Image 1 (cartoon, rainbow, N blue to C red):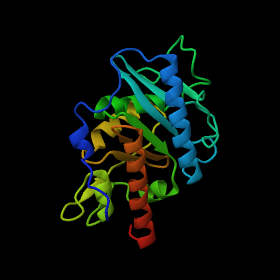
Image 2: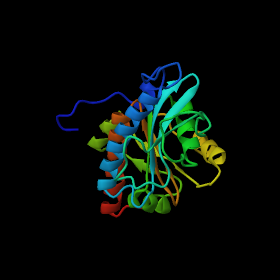
Image 3: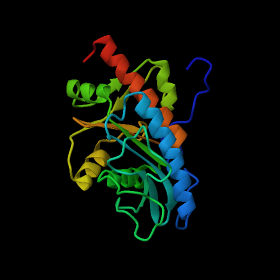
Length: 229
């Protein structure tokens, strides 16, 4: 992408990614993660991607057992603090006895955990963008991109090969939704759209997840601007 270096594909990073500790996460680690998540949420909210109290973000803090810091449910994502975070387990349930973490996790925390287990991701971003929902309506079978320089931002070739962004049907049951994601996902594409809902994107760490989200959103906006569908 211009003078930006070409990045490794997420598929190449799936084995052994992340610097998450093997042991349990401390309260201070959770709070530090909360501060990072709050900053990222404010960034996405400023784009209009997390309106109202929608969306959620997570960071993997430990792998064995799996522990994630997830933004608290029902909070304005543009006004989060370091304390607006919840430590959850591999099923997305709040971990009992943790002093840090105000509020409760979203039910969608279970899908964050599923993505982390499935892909090895170190962070997951879930935003509610109009472009994602609109394009999923136009192309419920998935959205194909090709011959675009911005694909390099996902570690994909800029020409010669097509890249498909999967679209899956929504469900309020995170196990069902996770099964659909696992079946539909393309290991080369670190994202999926949930129809009528929003966009899930992941990366080896929170910064890469942010970059992936921004690139996928750019691709979706291009499709809408071009009137393709």
